[in-house]
Image 1: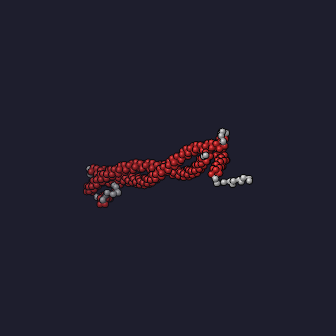
Image 2: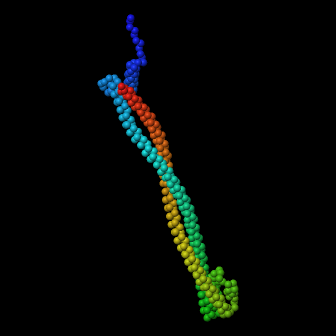
Image 3: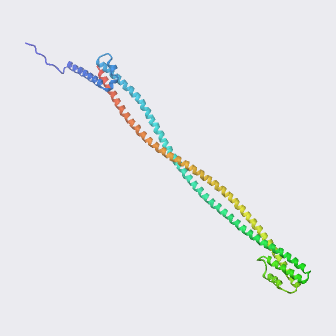
Length: 352
């Protein structure tokens, strides 16, 4: 009879080998299609496709080219990223140092500002005290000068009266002495005229009441001349001695007062010059401190502004660098995965 067909043996050794070969062929075709469909392959597809060989070989060459390009790109981008990362590190460190230096400068400048303000306040107080001292000095000199001028005027007036009285007394004594040699009537007339002149010339003070009374009595008496003449001569001599002693005393007192005044003015003048020189020095120091304060305050303000700008730049740079680092990490991870996929694909396509 007709021969029976043997049933297929799907799980036989020969069939199993066929299935494995079929699976590898399918995997190769699938890898080739996936690689050819990849957008990364566009840059090297033309060169790889134009090469000779089977389709799988061409795909393998394409994968090798793509992998090589990815590795080259990774190296180039790594160098670029390393430079950027180095710039980030150096820039942030430089700004951090600048911020630290600025904080130290601000502290130092702040202390200098306080010190200068204290110095200015001290000099202002010292200048005010010197101004008060100088004012008091000038007022004291003006007052002393006014008093001395008044005293001198009084001395001049007093000594003038004394000198006139002394001159009149000298003349009267001479007249009385000479009159004793003339007739009695002429003697009396001449003596009374001279005594009258003396009374007019006598100073307001320095004449005793009893002396003035005797002179007045002599002027109005009609008695003999001789007895009264001797008495009047005694009064006049006594007054003469008194007035000359008063003149000498007044002159001595004036000399002493004037010498004391000159010493006082010399001392005050010297002190005034010293105080004015000291005031000028303090004013110079105050002006210098004020200029230094203005300059230091400007430096302080500029340093604070620069510090704020550095902090802002530091924060912005740190954020930008961190963002770039995150992008690089993601990109590097994706590239590593892509290279790993190509490596596995090459293993599949080149395996027997």
